[in-house]
Length: 316
Ligand SMILES: [Zn+2]
Image (cartoon, rainbow, N blue to C red; front, side, top):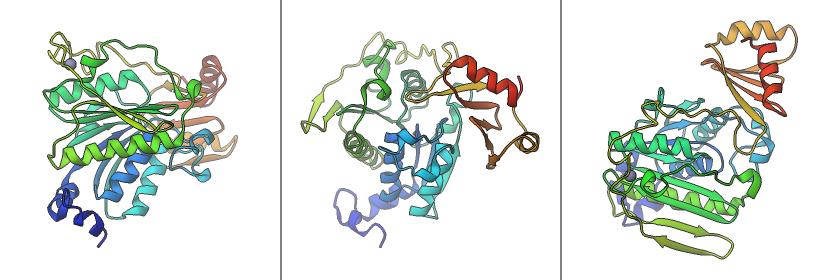
């Protein structure tokens, strides 16, 4: 009954619905696009998910995500998992509150990967991984009233063929974004995902969307014979080019790395000086969110202030 309306739609049908149930999907980045796409995917019948995000929920996220006031200050991964389980309590979700890099890249292994990140370097990493492992992936990004979606298939044109140089791109922090842009882009991204999972013909173009002056433009893409990623000369999955994120897009949050942390032990220490909020693999104290893998997010005006608070409460 849950999927009856979708099963009547001939392009999906009962068989298609069964296929979706057995597929595994990864979403990297759980901001505006990631949380909206996860919502659509789970409601459409995806029951096996990997979700990856390094950030915490902030007030300014509420305009375009699924998060609520109660989620502010908590890891996006944890909040989204709880939300998705309310839609369907029988689904399997592997939640990874971490920064995706060449060492932990295997956490995204699945039938398809959705890029909902906010940075180019993570996209190069996903691109190389997907070429190597022959996994399809769907790139999406949006800004202001404009969205972009590309459905990448193994052996076809790749992200690096189209965007070979990391340019300093615009961010939502400086250019703004409408939640309607997110809704439109997310809908197209998820629809391409479903078509790909069902082995239907997918859109081979760069799909450019405009929500203010409603329109869709299809831009054809050509494979670059000299593309280093297509020629398996990998830079990101090998660790040759390291992703060093210290400040997150659209926030005053800094990321610092230390040794792996015993959450219970640190909690006891910090409880003596203030209120500590904690979960299985993280704790929140004042302006710090500490993860057991040694990653610490610090809200601060600048990097030095972030480092100072890190040393003061967590140690070097
Ligand atoms: Zn390429």
